[in-house]
Image 1 (cartoon, helix red, strand yellow):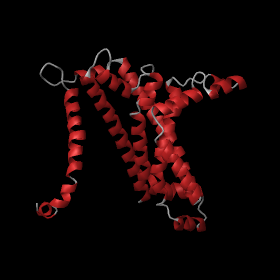
Image 2 (tube, one colour; image 1 turned 180 degrees about the vertical axis):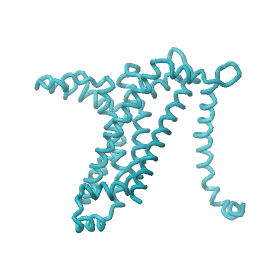
Image 3 (cartoon, helix red, strand yellow; image 1 turned 120 degrees about the horizontal axis):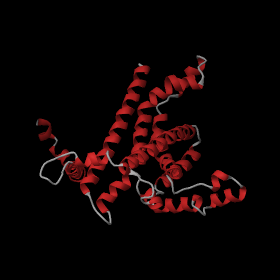
Image 4 (tube, helix red, strand yellow; image 1 turned 90 degrees about the horizontal axis):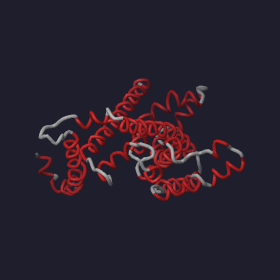
Length: 282
């Protein structure tokens, strides 16, 4: 109370931010949470959750979203790690140019990104036609409008964000540590396995969380490409709220809670990995 009395003016500057969080995050979340348990009979129940885990269409959508999010996150993290590593050893001019490119590509999404991939890898895309003329079967038969075909787009999502998130982590690796390891005849692989990766693991796991969430909730580009042709969790959720035929906000709220639980499960797994590396480091 004494702290509040002394700093009430300073805290007043944060009041709009607190109100924004309350009215735009907490209030909608609790309304959605309560709606997911409403049955229309005046008492709460698990009817919507039972329907989600008993119908094949919802299970396939969850499976597809988790599969593509996990694979895109793992591959994206590996690519981002080596890109950030290469960027830390680049000159200032090259680093400035590449950072500008990353910032540009990170905002290139939605309809422009969809049209770009359709132009390149669509049914009559540039690369597909080149593959047909050159006799490259896998490129000639590339199906952008499938789950595996969209995988390349999801990986594209991950590269700008992941690289920008991992860049500060490489600054924690001091040159003195590398020099000391070199003097002790420690190979580069062993240095990164014993020293570099354990130190960077909190940042890497934080990046994994961000990339997984980014891939799991991706909606615009998959919707523009396949609409409901490929069942995905974000598209199913949106259809429950703005569907042309029938709107089911209660079921959509339950699907949203399931998506949130998936994110929390991944967060718990990454925290376990982080603690494991921290124990090994200690």
